Image (cartoon, rainbow, N blue to C red; front, side, top):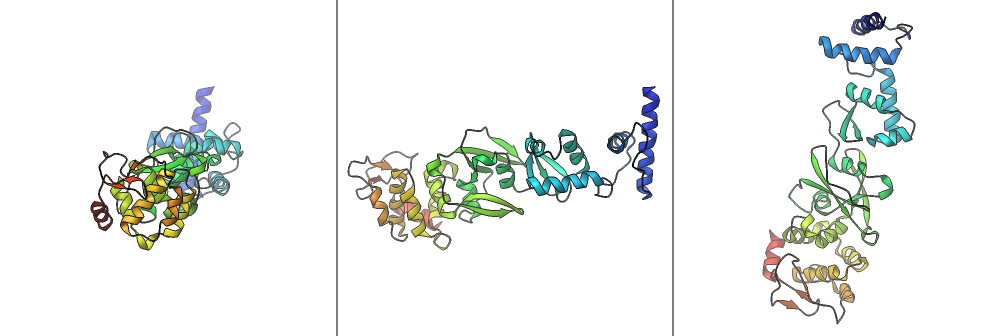
Length: 316
């Protein structure tokens, strides 16, 4: 009986293919035991078996297209399966149909993106990276990724750096490697909303990106890249940058910023001297380099790079 039922279902599904090609409307019920969803599923199975090609457009799968519009309207272009289920918009079966129809692409485990042009368009890595983090964490793009976005570095990073509140393992999304970096609440400020691939993306401002980069040169291409970004006079508001340095919880970072601005002749960093205390220990400008005898008493900074080399970096 099951074999007969399957053969009947298969015949009806093949009839569906032929009717679709001839643009003949189907009845709402094909068979007492074969509703619309089963027909679509059987059709996809038979297509893979006999090599028949199904049209991939909204008219071929009207219920799928409507579901897609509902999902995009409620969750945006990148969403997690849990969000879909929590919103009552669908389940795993719906996602599988959307993927097979070419409307949705798996970005990573449990994360999906809506594809405007099936199997062609890939959402920007920033959108995917932020979509992998719960909205409650208010993650944002910074370090070398933000420097590249604001045109403060000529090098295109191979890694997307995302500031988060809780530790997360690195991931690969949309062909890019994503590194999640824990940022304390006191360091999470001066963020902007940029539009990338038609989607809003939370990102550090140009000045905050420079400050984050100076705080973590290892995530920003090294000190030479940070110096070049800092010297981008036409792209930065140095008064605003000084204000961000005063607000930052790390006085050591403010001292390094003040010293660099002084050596490079960038605006007036004098307000940052308020972060210097007489009892502060000397700190190295390049955190990875050895200490040297070059010492600036005003900023209590050991210049283990050299003022002339810093100026050369800024001009490079």
